[in-house]
Length: 304
Image (tube, rainbow, N blue to C red; front, side, top):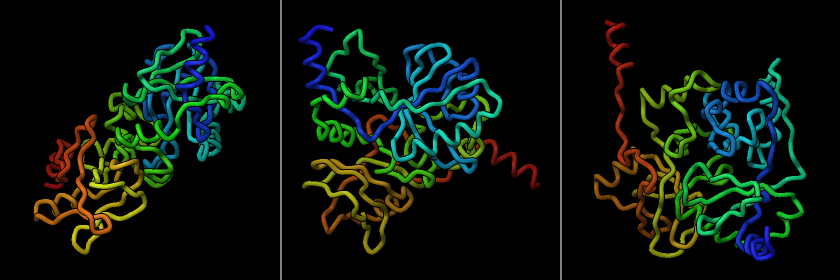
């Protein structure tokens, strides 16, 4: 990499101190990960990436993460620092006799590079699999990552303007279902693969119901504030989870917000009216209705 390229990366890339890297490697790595994670691992090509999660048997998110295939038998896991220890512990427990090694890589670090910047050929980089607008993740020696001078505030503001959820901020780990935090909209759930931990609950929500709770975009007439409730009359219908400028992410009950809007009741935060919108990349309905699938009809037949 030339001196000019090095300087450009140091200025543009943002070190992500709240992320860690782990490696899963071995002849059984792809098969093992494919069998426990929410995403398709076996068809992931070398140099490509996936968004996925490890769930509890009850279908709640232990950790979401970005998964990168280094080679045929080696994968990198880009995960939140706050749940990394639990994630690795649970993967180790699930490994049983599979020929897979799991290790945390404290000598490496993760950085983010916005899509308007080119990635030098000799830096390990993976496209963010959630949205092209999130750019690339760079894998760097930790010392090099610490020297980066990118704008962390601008990086966070971009995430919020795009309404892309962040675990530990927009939702709590071990408490949220994947559909509630839009993982189904961002490619984090594969509905064509076989079983994995929590798959039955995820499948039921996909085919038999609809998520009442969703993370959506909130637009303010002034500077948004995180952590405050959204009110419809005297009833709380949601909460602002992240904020940057006039943009915010909100966790809302779609049935309640839909009913309020149908009745002409304004949605207020600290007495100021706000607007809720589905993120541009999402396709779920903003008005909640119970979904009926062929499985429901089968149940009716069985019950006579």
